[in-house]
Image (cartoon, rainbow, N blue to C red; front, side, top):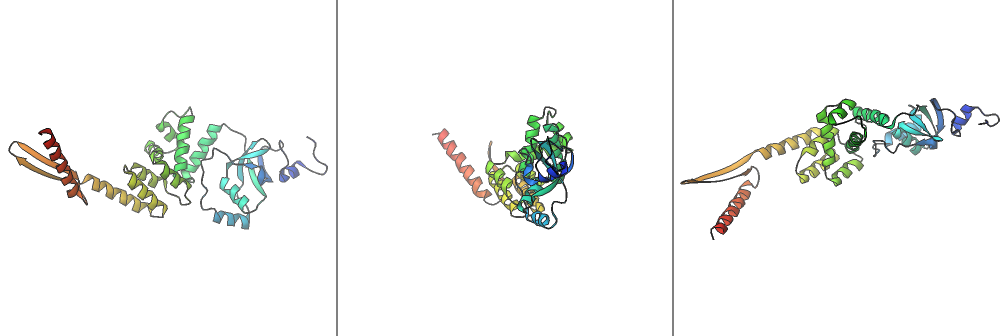
Amino acid sequence: MKLPEGKSRLDLVKAGLTGGWAKRGRLVVNLDRLLEDPRNERKTYRNMEGLIASVKALGVIEPITVTPEGDGFRILTGHRRARAARAAGVTEVEILVREPEDELARRRKSIVSNVQREDVGPVDMAEALHSLLNEDPTIKNQAALAQVIGKTEAWVSGMLRVLTLPAELQEKVGTSQHSVAYETMMRIARVEDAVEQRALVDAALSGVPAGEIRRRINERKEQGRATEKITESFGNYTASVQGPAGSGANERMRTAVEALLKKLRLNHS
């Protein structure tokens, strides 16, 4: 390719005009040459105002890491910085170009990085882990996945359980501008009652501290374990009714007794 008169290769790179020149190292390119990675774990970009203000004042301080793709560059790390730069009206950014690598290897590194920083939402992370478990032939089970990302098998199992939440709750958490800690979402996912899950998600998204969410869940467990029981003996026969303690327990026990009496009458009619 012949260079335009009076232009060096660096000039072309800075102008964002080259397609096949520099493929490694630190470069300055037009922002519109950067392509977002469709497989990036992050789907929701929260709390961008501060970063945008910083970029307006100081520019993008840390280079965005990319890999060559066609005449442009696919972002490896720095999706938030790239979006903030666009929002701030920046036209050129510094990038750090790395050699292309295996897609699955790249995704493993990205997931590990985001797990360590809890840098993406819990639903996005759960989906990424599920995808890696299903698509990476070197990861046979949850134990292997845990080893790859440096977490325990119980942690991986807990994160994957987030995907058992009702779809509406997953979407609510995934699209909210308020983040929820991974551990909090794991605890909520272990709650069996869907109504209680919804209440806990709403509380977490409204800013209720993780410790308070944990207390509510533990209190609910204790209530579930507590029981009330009434037993009466009549000669050779013993009748009893038992159920969870708490508000309205007596009324529910009476309803159970009445249902049993009705069944006895039908059997002897």
